Image 1 (cartoon, rainbow, N blue to C red):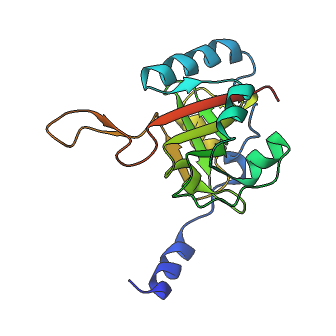
Image 2: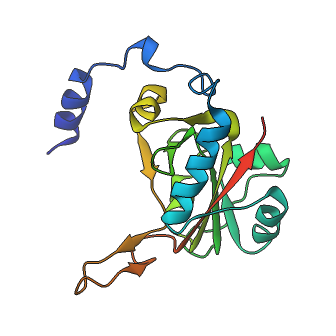
Length: 180
């Protein structure tokens, strides 16, 4: 397929309707506490864990690659480490999904999505107000066509049905909740 064919196909895709992007945090106003507990429970079942800001900062002191959004949250400069050499990758999530323990990351300028795929540890910064109840709600919150839905650390059971972590991505997934 040539670049012209690709552009033609993409030009025919409709833009998502404006009403499909409610502001993050408006979807669970009345059930946020119960939903956060469910999110934590589902994430733990998948092998992920919830960490606080201090533990996240400590992990980022090693070789880390962070995207611009994380740099803004932590009040530090963006990191230019080589993603393949980094011990830790840090990103921000558009939202978290209570029913699955998943996080949704969108692509865009300053958002180093390889930070979520290459280093052995991926830390996701998630605003508590950006938690949604269902995958359907997460898809409605998307504002870009390019996004990745992460459900736990990387794992596969391709080899004789034996579960192995970290073959195709991070062995560990930490979620650091932010209050605002």
